[in-house]
Amino acid sequence: MSAVPPRRQPRLEMAGIAKRFGATVALDAVDLRVGRGEVLALVGENGAGKSTLMKVLSGAVRPDGGRIAIDGAPFQPADPLAAREAGVAMIYQESNVVPDLTVEANLILGVERHRLGFITRAAHRSRIRAVLARLGRPELPLDARAAALSPGDRQLLEIARALLTDARVLVMDEPTSSLGLAEIARLFEIIEGLRREGVAVVYISHFLEEVQRVTDRYVVLRDGRVVGEGPTADTTVADLVELMIGRRLPEMFPVTQRTPGAPVLSLDGVGVGGRVNRVDLTLRRGEILGFAGLVGAGRTELLRAVYGLDPIVSGRVTVAGYSGRKRLPADRLAQGIGLLSENRQAEGLALGLSVGHNMLLSHLTPFARWGWLRTGQMRRAVERWMAELGIRAAGADQAIRELSGGNQQKVAFARLLHHDVDVLLLDEPTRGIDVASKAQIYDWIGRLAGRGKAIVLVSDHVPELLGVCDRIAVMHRGRLGPSRPAADWTEHDILTAATSGEAAA
Image 1 (cartoon, rainbow, N blue to C red):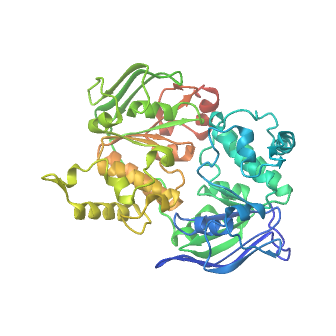
Image 2 (spheres, rainbow, N blue to C red):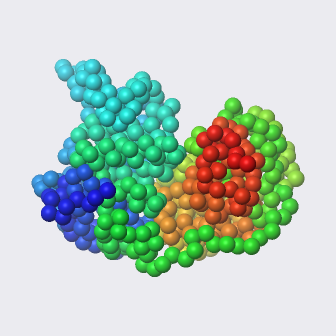
Image 3 (tube, rainbow, N blue to C red):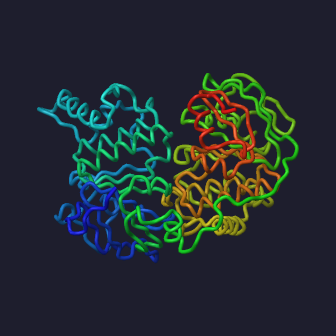
């Protein structure tokens, strides 16, 4: 990949962009340029200003200063619709498709063509088929409900919607966070096609290996300022991390010595609604067990069922020697099991509540006295967790929906720490989190295991599993293979087992 020649007029130019929220400076004279057919990586820690900058570009936030131009013409979007009409398309980390609408309805939503008050379906379908062919999926059924699509196809739907509006600038925010390996490969092929067509792509990701693979240049934001930029080919992951956090990152996967103790969670022939078949496993205190597998293999369904969110249709779950009928999430919490959901927006957080309420409301006993809550003690507890996990927020009372995705994830993790559960079911705990915060989460996981906590870690990032876990098992089409020490696995072995169901000898 080659960087765009510096003298060519950029497709997108943002100069001196400034934005302040009260006393907080979110953006401080930020410059960003992307050429035609160029893929620019925009990287930085959670809260560095990436989302605010892109909200300015999309018309969702009005800047306090600076200017924007597209193909040399001044651009001042009054709202997201105006930005979309000008050729700016956003694909957010959290899917924006409407699950109950069809593929076709999602694609034309807001840009319907009509004649005499009637939508011209034939014209729409012709354009839609042409765009899906460009994306390599002409066979995608237009009458299928979006809810029935895979995560990769839902994301493809958003890209297709952008192309239907003749997007000149496409922003992708953590585009691979919910995708499997095959879907990621297809996404990169799509990006290559967009490059050839002259679309300017802004690629936001915390997976720096992906950044090096797919982008031409990078811009690093830290505390609302540009602290580095240049050709991606001329830098290393370590260099990017140092620019992002202002220092060299210590060992990503800290090594801790621990000895597994007594069994605390046992699954005996557990089946979940045709999606998970006869799973047997034993989890001991003080160990980290990793689950690898493709998207849809059944890992999330298994964790949800163990926690009581979905019914178990066969088999038995034993928690610390107890296996009775109490299987609701409240029962599991009382038994010492906690779940960090992979879907923080839909079920992991109460977006209408504050940071403090999301951390503490499910476990208020430590703050209750004679029927009253000690609110000062609650606030101090929230502030302590915010400091320990590096959560960037204005305070305990800030609405959690205002936080970046990574900081929301850390609030959800803090809730588990507040509960002090014995078994932690962690489903993609580092999704959408910057590299420094990932190292911090890995350190916490190791420390918790060192204290005798038992941890199940589901992750699509194989190096994460190899670096953090004591044992790893691979799930394939609802069946969990035998676990082996992490040292006995290679990345190739795990991928082979995930795709074929056959473990290497």
